[in-house]
Length: 158
Image (tube, rainbow, N blue to C red; front, side, top):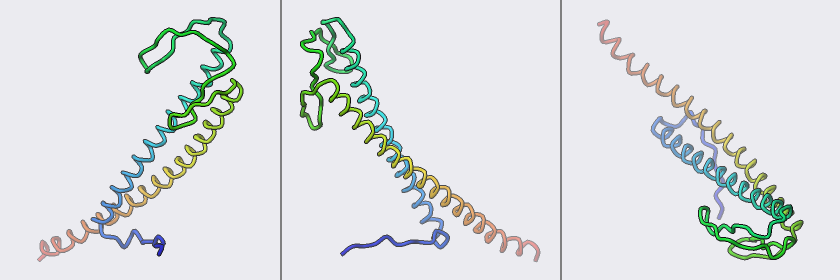
């Protein structure tokens, strides 16, 4: 049994519900923004991998520093310049040629770029929805203030 989304007229919602809805949209925007940042960080790491392959291919030096962590390096030696271990996910590595490794990284970068474009589109929609909710909420608050002023100003004239 599937439930299809129903359209709700935002103008018919009370201010309290609009505030709750606005809060959930804010949370979604925050989540999507963080996801977009994570995609950008992943793209950057993949580009660094391509850059490292290019640098190693061009280098004539056999000695190098191998990163164990972002701040810890150990001395190492280049065994072969045309074969690389490529992380294919979940801790599995495959040996590939420089050309195939770079093609694989390029493919991943393009996929992340497509995902980022989709996320940006969703963020635009969510921001438009947030603006709409804010406008409706402002109108409702103004209406409530006018309704509250109405009876009190009538009492003052009597």
